[in-house]
Length: 284
Picture 1 (cartoon, rainbow, N blue to C red):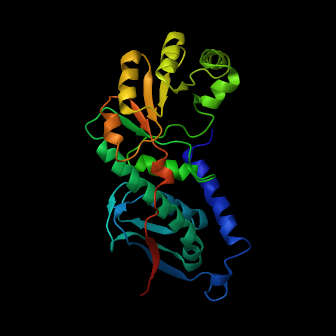
Picture 2 (picture 1 turned 120 degrees about the horizontal axis):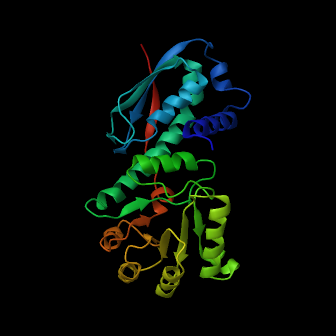
Picture 3 (picture 1 turned 90 degrees about the vertical axis):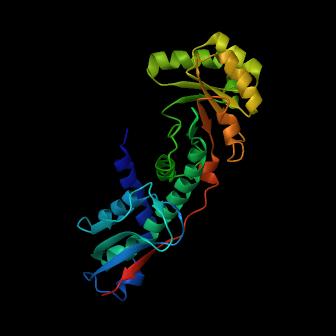
């Protein structure tokens, strides 16, 4: 299993190759290759900043001795007109990294800002916020990191780190009991310690899971808050619980008031709007 830093390094190398190709000809044609310069990240919109550490990594992948001075840390409030960081490096490094760095930080800051709105509304409640796998292909690592920076929790990174028996798995397998039984045997024989979550679509489904057991978490999919409360009475703390489907900023507190353990909201990623940032040259 690769670490976050290893995965980030792969992401950066692939993204630079996609952008730079056989050379940054705009810089190569008019700036001597070893000329040094400074640049600052200018914040142009209020929100929660995310991607400071990612920006530093991008610059240092291209130039390990680049001097990076952060003025904010990931998760800090950011305000229009202020400076997020300053970098001193070869001008070619700054220009080569500029768009990748901004693309990452703008997207991550948008996600962190929206996530913070959700987690702020959950303050004082038992319920915690989870993200989902509704992410951008090849950018999931940083989208989920932005959720974490914004105060949310990562549900699972992919198909490999948790068993999630959703409606299609259950239907293809032949029912709740068959799917749970096979999943439990699989974990015991091949992946000890892997958690099992199962989706339920009705209170009858919840009763069947309770009776059969062998799950760690029950997902209550597209349940109303009233139905969640009824399900929680049946479950009585024997399984972790997660509400999913149709959860918005407007109804989030209604779900949290039921006492459900988790709410999952793909919207914190796919509804997030990128924040406005720019990287500007500092001239002597």
